[in-house]
Image (cartoon, rainbow, N blue to C red; front, side):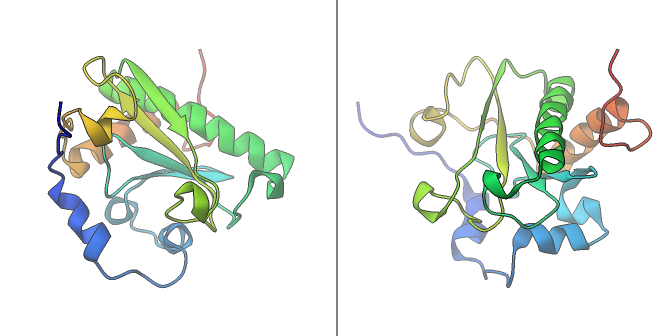
Length: 173
């Protein structure tokens, strides 16, 4: 069995494109056009942004509003808000796309492969039964293709239904 390739032409911009100055997350948070900046949810302590260069459809990131690079620098209130937003993101993604499961994780520091090592962020990657674990995405699984604008719309609807007043805490039944 030889290595199989995944055709992901949208990633060329990430690899070869001009790198922006400063922190990409802080830059996006300061801007107000959430649609253009792919921010699907703004909470009191964290926000949710689509990965512009995903390996899998629906790949989001939960990012603390404050520029911090490690978990130990989070206040207790920030940590609660951050992980509550992770939980909310899973709920909204489940509602929008009905995945079978999720990979949730973070790379802290450059040595771990963090693309933005100075600003902590949690990756949330929805998974479907046909795509059994995280590694096959880069080795032997076809990419499930949804355009970013459709993912943004459906996730935004999911967040809006869970947080109708725009609050960071979801309405729980």
